Length: 348
Ligand code: AHM
Ligand code: MG
Image: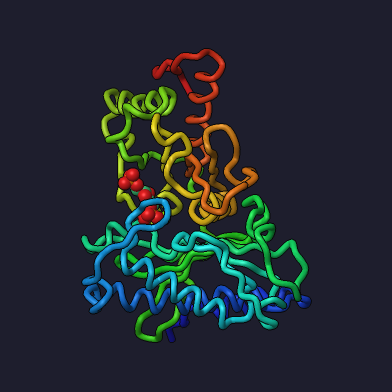
């Protein structure tokens, strides 16, 4: 008889048995995030839910377009996390300030959660892949009190868990703890995420680069030279490197995690900090990639070592297979040392 795959809950229970003192709060959080994801998936898969696709777009405090689906997903995550009593407060891309769940039950929780409810939402209307990204911190303030900014403004290194949900051809939840990275595919027939990708490792070597190449002339010369060096390599070895860019970070990074490669979102002349957000986009992915053997830097430092000062701050991001990120960082170091671009024909 065919062996049924373990559900997310069964998997968490099997992990909990290894830690007799664990409270199960982290497992509750993952279950609740999974529940919100199923509700979001249900709306996305119907693509045309009245009041979601029809409403007018708004703008957030950074002037970016907020789609009705962004608001819906934000509200679903907020509600499940508040009800779960395992979360003391949240930070969301869609909310300017920290939301403190200041009541007795939530104050007793040891965790806070940061999330981007729908990443890549500009792709929604085109039926393309989008995702949800989350990071979970253990509080540094005392349980029993309301959480505060201190609990959120921790380096990514302190994350207890981080993950994403990808709403694509199938819907998957991938999450990492320091123990490793596991992927669960939603089985709509039973409404459960089931273990489909155990112990994910990011291939050490990659051949796919993922970048919005239309901006290449605005990137620093090291990043531009790095990209050109791969194109020149292809003159001698056609097809060795290839480019893929969905424009939905969750989709581009899911592929990079499973197949290897590098994803680049550099600074440009007019956006010195890049576009992507440190706390709920870059840190969660940096944590996942490191747990899977990959690497994530801002060009100079490991993403996970950046001390945050603002919950919505941005950072350049270079992330993926260790060999590709390491090679890019050599281009950047060379440029810093000499003030000129790395000779693209230089051996790695
Ligand atoms: P969002 O959170 O507002 O959707 O923005 C983040 C998205 C990422 O998913 C994606 O990698 C990037 O923006 C694409 O930006 P660009 O269009 O500049 O290439
Ligand atoms: Mg985003």
